[in-house]
Image (tube, rainbow over all chains, first blue to last red; front, top):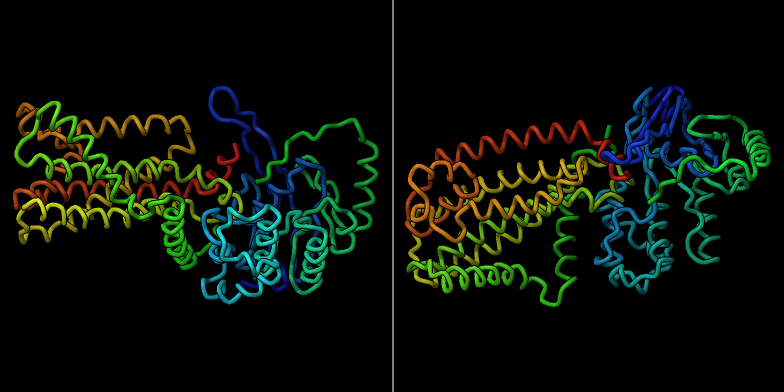
Length: 248
Length: 259
């Protein structure tokens, strides 16, 4: 289903609540997202900024369909929305090559596509000598390189990127950054979550600033980032993030 | 709203099934041998306790025991693996929007492959022990099919409950042990139970299935078709209900995994 305006994803007044515990002891309700409305169009790179625990990761999970919004509406106009998470479905006992295949498939590729991408991914990850070894023998940097390379080579109509530019050693980091920027500058539509405000201004056409689960401001990258920095300055040392960020 | 469609679901499923079986083997020195060694160890222990110490032994006690143990351990292993399946995949659930039934179904199928090997070995053992194979053995796949349906039904229920009420994890192990005592794995209900209790005993689907396996394999008698049909129908009903529940709770499971 294609939208005439080139819309890929739209949220209308989306709200999402979860509870922090189970049973008789826990169970505080946290409103992770409140009244979120925005849309993403083809070819656009949308930045998402905000302090830890403001709801960025939750927002990405709602966009992927992992979480269903409690309130409001989520409308998708495209088939493949993929969360570029590291190490999807990795099994330490399997070889790097097997993990590569299964990870690609979880991200939406067919087995044939995954096998066809094998050489490309291995080359980018610089793991030619290790790819047939079990994953448990990999260092964490090697694992992250494999995970990143899989995510990078996957096709998606809309790619959700959650702060993954910082993997591997210095040389891999700059290569990864470059490859990701190239991808964002192409026709790929991206929602990009980052704490590196420089990258956000460089890469994004539009930025959303989330604060306590609500959209505080949305618009031109320079303006939004400027306002966000001012805000950070004003609350420095005062407020603690109200929620812990939960990432895997 | 799910990102992974049906075709992709099954493609990933079978790839993952093959990979998991391979990965399971690579974790141990003896690998595939464990699939057979595990039931052998169990049977040996039960044989020593009940056959030797307690002297409940009849002439064909060993083959009698093997049949009961092999079919019951299939049930118990699959159910307890299924009940852990959701918790073991928390991470993945929060990275990919996939139908959550994927996880319990995967472990049940993994166990099915292993069980098929064990079953063939068991038939070989029975023949070696001098049990006569008859045409009625051809009904075995049907009894196994009914047991698979039962495993899926119970496995899905356990898999669905544990993330909602984690306390159930502790209960499931205990319930499986109790079910074992009540399934006649190492005793013949006809010898032990009063006649008026026997029908009640056979209401336990595992007891009923074990009785049917023995009836077919040892006595060469047709299985109790109407009992099998009842077990199959109830299981199918539960499976369908659980498919509906999993669809309803799909994203709730991902959320619960974080709590």
